[in-house]
Length: 126
Image (cartoon, rainbow, N blue to C red):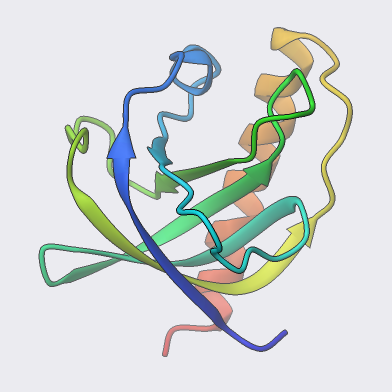
């Protein structure tokens, strides 16, 4: 996959990802932005000049009509990102979206995604 870059300001979300054990920064999608296929990706997120390995989910919400970009900074749990500007680089797609199976099962899927992201970064250190 060719790397794709985009940026946006973090807006307050519903808190669902945090309840599932994976707090995310919800990026506002700008009108006319080029967005790749829906799915879960690994990438890097720049925040205030520092790069963070990240898990990124591009989805259309549970209702299927509101595009969402959710960024989870790996190994960063208590970072308040509301209102901050993030630059995100997608490096590799790790899976397609799955229909929401319920919170308990989704938490397991996300935990697996985080593990896969860690494995990807251990191989792709540069």
